[in-house]
Length: 206
Image (cartoon, rainbow, N blue to C red; front, side):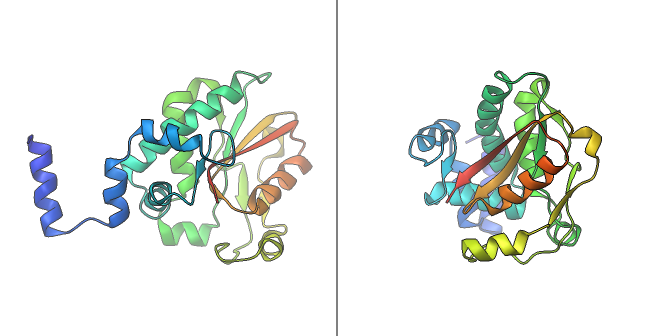
């Protein structure tokens, strides 16, 4: 056992890790690639799988470094495929988080996800994490029906800089998509700002 494993073992005995953290520690990129074949969307993960839920949970609530590395590596393959077929340099946009929730959580998981993917795909994209903003502090989407989610998100987002969007291909990234309501609202804002093409990608679908 090397020194890093010894230290990890000692720390775990003092403060036992979360169950989701333990799952993520054992995950490999090969496993995730296998799981994408079982998903409902090409290249995305099935959220109903326990390993995927653990990955998303660790990314969303704890900005777990290993979760970000794994998710970013998987997402980068999808993004590079999209960029290779586009005219010009696509704009990469994370789904925004309202300022109040960001302060509460300390990070926006979709930005963590995008930045991890850009480790492998930076040369293919222009990254604009603040061009799309959430201006309406909506309740949590989890547990709401599709119609409630859509109503919840109506006019919840706006474009900060229209000149960055006009005529561009925009690739929007979220961690999980359930009904598509979040993507629909982001698409509305981008289309109104003059985006030429909009592609929405979720790490996982439920």
